[in-house]
Length: 113
Image (cartoon, rainbow, N blue to C red):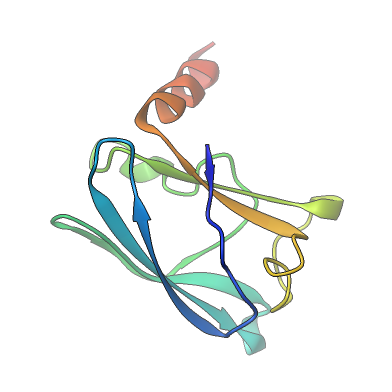
């Protein structure tokens, strides 16, 4: 797991993440005040594009796309709540991690047992 560092309390942000296989993906996130939450505005990896997914506490937010992309996203927050304050990531109340392909498979194996 690799922590996505540098998430601030800016309402709109763009991060480029280097994966273990040498490829990159970009993730644009946005805080929506009226919906009390953080959202993936756009995630692009090679020919795959995803828009409009809420960031919630989840072992793999991108699980439904496991056959299309070689990584996942894991969000965890203190107090067992979803990140719904603009400062949650900056203050480390919530953390967003990139799961490797092997970690995605480990999680899938866990679910099968």
